[in-house]
Amino acid sequence: MGLLSFVREAGEKLFGRKDVEAAAADSGAAERLADLNAKAAAAILAYIGTQGLDASALSVSFDGATSTVTASGSVSDQATKEKILLCCGNVDGVEQVIDQLAVTHPEPEAQFHTVVRGDTLSAIAKHYYGNANAYMKIFEANRPMLGHPDKIYPGQMLRIPT
Image 1: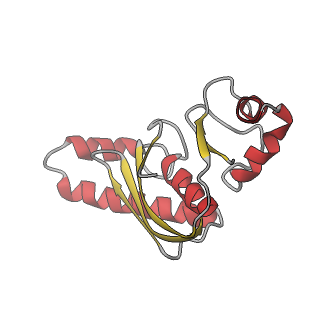
Image 2: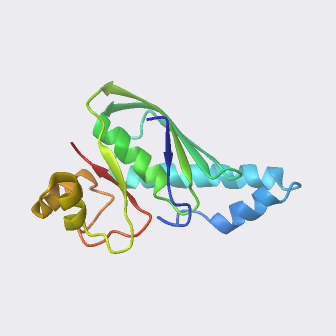
């Protein structure tokens, strides 16, 4: 994949985006920015763990100056890789995710869809599969990040499996 783009102002609020932006704008706050970057990376890694995704061979770093997360390491399958990347990017304050993850058992990549105002999983399923009733396929592909099919928000990126 390489690089994924996200909506910086949308997603889980895991760290203080405004604090990071202020430190990044202040040329004399390099040490404070490094500390905030480390805390943000730790929060994202912890979030991945709470989703039940195997993050044992995973490294996450955050650069507040560019709003970029880098995910590196190894995962067992393509679906886990994609879910980890979405966990990294669907975070308030993250604009890009650099994918440096290796997959032990490669599979075809899924498509991605950025939710816009008025989207529903049914409408997204109709667009990608031609069948609105296939929304559960999208819901299941995005579990555990999605807890309910009606709980999606504008700016959120979703996996659309083949």
